Image (cartoon, rainbow, N blue to C red; front, side):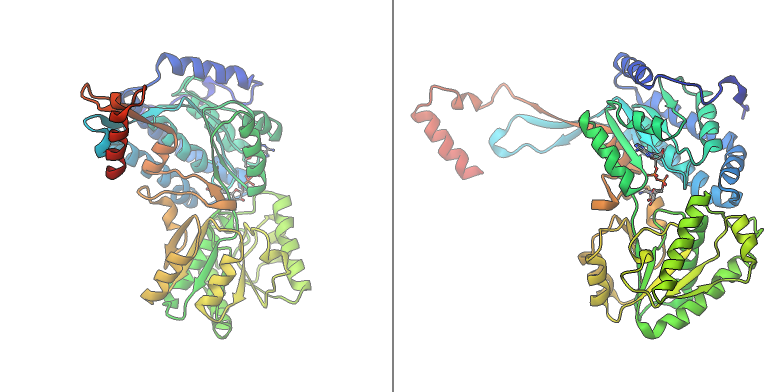
Length: 481
Ligand code: NAD
């Protein structure tokens, strides 16, 4: 494919965001319902341009983090985007169709239909942890549903944000897709714009601020937030499978994943063996952490310090800390790298058991029965993800039926997130609304209900003046309802 010269448009210029939104809205109004051919062309050029610049995206993200393996960016960003675009290209034409809906007997022979319509301009605010994927996946839903979009990526990944701006500007005009780079001030101004829909991915605390800003405009919001995602390991679990899967879920992107297993619940008698096994597993994945190109650095000094504080607090309150490998601590700190750290003898007063960890620290909570584990989970804020490892079907059904979380993976971690045929989203403090696949299409569409009256309608029997005939009609209708 033809490479595009990225020097054509420069990033970071000061821009009046309200003016960009006004232009996008005006352009939308001239073409409020793009055809399938136009949407497909947009999806295709989005996929092509990202693929063409994939090596630059890998480099920019790695430099923003300090280090992130190119393979990890391929697995957790580029492949997900490719899957999302292929799925959208395959199915959007069908999702766009007018759906015939049933008409209740008393209203026949009228008919009902649902017409999906683009909303207009979608605002997208994205975080730093998967900075490409979490900006582009909502964009796929937005443009597949026929909208225009403005994106505000994170200030923690400035290279990626600038690159994304320049790359998208080579295939979309500012009136189609616009990227607003900058810091928190830009983010605040952005979240106060009267978009037709705003999707925010980030922390629960900022999510509250963004929802309040959007509420001033009555802008509907999808909030993709974080939280503490539990992992319950049942006695029936196959530990040879569970341990590498939990280790991989925790260590991908050095634990800086919204759906990383935050902590583990398991019977006390199994904790020692589990700790041994997962430490050994981490050492097999990463024989050395310092200098290892496969292992991601913590995004910023402030986040590195936050993780150290969590560990100090836990240790001061009686936790036992075990660190994988024997890397030089000073070197690790210099590289902002944190090896897998298993924390046992945990108690509820430890900060590590209260806030989202977002790093490779794995606390283990002793929990003797499924009932105990479920009570523990139910007593906390509803998590974004829940993981259950085991083979016992009755217990699995109980967990699925009686716990509430955004999503679930059984016998693995995080994979539910990249399934395009199921919704991805949180619940309560972990989020509001969902996207990916058809759920994304619906989130960024107005599903307009249309009632079409028949010339043979009996409705006139209910017009005033109300007579004996009306009474009869009402009695008949009551019987039907
Ligand atoms: P964050 O909330 O600090 O920032 C996210 C975005 O919000 C950034 O673009 C930032 O510029 C913007 N922002 C910051 N302050 C703002 C304000 N006052 N008003 C408006 N916008 C503002 O989150 P983060 O640190 O970038 O990401 C980590 C968090 O995101 C974790 O809690 C993680 O669980 C969550 N997360 C959730 C998902 C998901 O899909 N549910 C995915 C990734 C990360």
